[in-house]
Structures are given as C-alpha cells and as structure tokens.
Length: 245
Image (cartoon, rainbow, N blue to C red; front, side, top):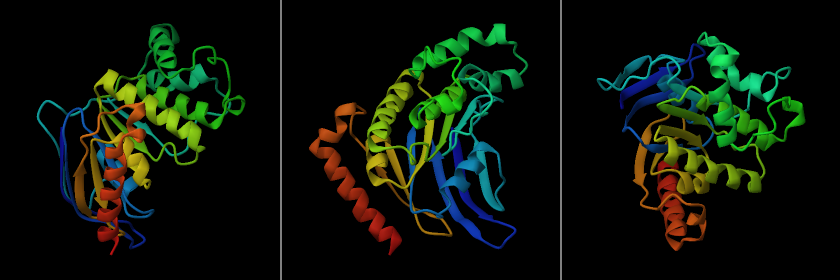
C-alpha cells in the first residue's frame, strides 16, 4: 500500500522529530508504532495522513492503492467531538463535508453506530457520554466514510483498563470485518502485543525505526490468556530496552 523511505522531519523550532525512518505498509496490515513519548510516532502518523510533509525522504503510495478523499480515517488521542453536537451529528460531519445530505447519509450513520455499540445514543451529546463512549463516537466518525486506511493516535491511552480492554477487542473485530489497514500509535507494550500483527519499535528522538517484530498470535479476546502472548510481551520488552539503550 505505502512505502516510507528514509523520511526525516525537523520542526521550525529546530526539534528533529524523525530521522531516516523507513517502513512499508501492506494492504490489510495491523501495524503498531511503539516507542516512548516524544519519539516521533504521532509525527509519522501525520505524515502518512498527509497532514504534514517530510523534510527529507519520500512517502510513496503503490499504484492503484492511494486512498481518495475520505478513504483515510484518523482517530486522535482525544475524542475531539463537537461539544454542542449529538452523537449522530458528530458522526455525520465527514459525510456532510463531502456534500451528502442527512437523508443520504442516514443509513451509513445508523450502520456504523450499531457496529460500535452506540445504537440508542444517537441524540446524546458528548457531555452525556462516558469516556469510552466518546471514543466510540470518534471511531464511528472515522469509519463512516469506509476508509481503506485507519490511523489511530493512542486512542485508548486515557481510558481505564476495563474500558481499554473492551475497546481493543472491539477494534480487532472491526479490523477483521472491514479488512482495512490499521496503523496504531501506542507507548504500551501490552497493547501493541495484543492488537498488532507487526510491532514497529522506534528509538527516542530523533525517531528511527529500530526493529520490527512479527506476531503470529490469532487476534482474539482470549489472546491475553495465551502463554505465547506473555512470551511476545517479553520479546518486545527486551527489544525495546535495546532500542532505548
């Protein structure tokens, strides 16, 4: 789907966020970008989304795979919902920006809200929802355009452990059902091991791709009970220690 070749990014302040970062995304991947805070994970995600441009290197979409407008979904760490808008209105926003009427979009809105478990909360405003439910609205908003590529920037970091585990399992189910490519930013080894098929380790700033670890675990809510999961967590931990040294 996408090739990132020796990409670098330095901000006007002089901070070098990325240096010589290279990565290839395959269609249908679930990739976790794992590293400490400030290592350039979110910067790399923004470059993939086209929200920023690299100072060096290239980001090249494979022929026939470049997503069209609306085919990249982006979920931020904060739900970033319109506080005055209902759940339905927040999810409708990207379709409205594409020129669709509420009538034209209604079926897609209802379907995606059902998929994330929010049927019955269409008229609720963000302040009436829990943190986990607000994040579900944010995910539904990203999914309503049927993206080929879903970019997620530590979306569950601020949630309690029980809610986080539930949303992680729901995300895996969505990924299997939709067949989209997911790039997921996290600084949690446990989260990366549970979710991703490929775990990409990044060094402290300036961020580089230090190593990639493949996971052979079957994506399932029972994964955490599998001894192979504990082994994978240990392997990632050792590799991360080496990357941070």
